[in-house]
Amino acid sequence: MVEQPGVVTNTTLLEGLRDPTNRTVWQHYVERYRPLIVRYARKLGVPEGEAEDAAQAALLAFSSAYRDGKYDRAKGRLSSWLFGIATNQIRDWKRSHRAREERAGAVEAEEALAGLAGEDELHEVWEREWRDAVLWECLKLVRAEVMPETFRAFELFALQERPAEQVAQELGMTANAVFGAKRRVLQRVGELMPLIEDDW
Image (cartoon, rainbow, N blue to C red; front, side, top):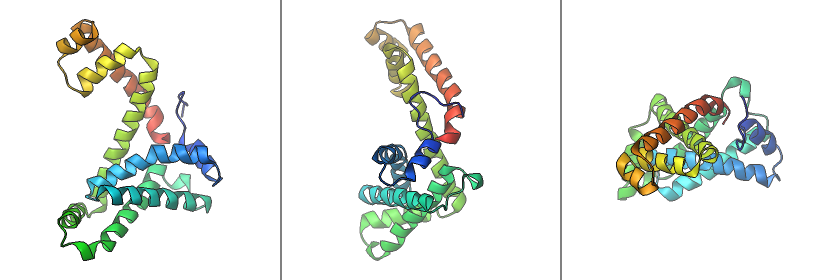
């Protein structure tokens, strides 16, 4: 991978995780993967508090397994290992809450998990969340590269889906410039995605 400025590769994270006292690496690790695991758990119907707990448990389980030499990069991507660990944590949550199915929230969560019981379906949900997380990382990098008004035009037009003319008026630019801002940001994102996603 060609390292991008501001990107901490998973190689750096993994090497740092060998030292349990390295708080800086642990913070990067948590900031990167915790939101991803939480969103994955929430998509499977896990309530917010329990999703946070499952994410924390998954991160701790992975770092412990890595320090014990159980993760072999030659046998799969980091995302695949995290997927397996996160899914196991969510299944543990499911088992531990069976006794509370009579409560509406727990029943809804159980139904959501039951609808995604197959490994392929679970993996599809995980991959969508993983790719979205990489996309947002790319957007963060592009934000630092382009002029602030260019990225703001992109945000308002592409992400918030406001009309180009309205965005142009608000930012004091032409509608063509708004379209150009979207094009430049998306082009750069397209360049960054393949460089980052396999080592993120």
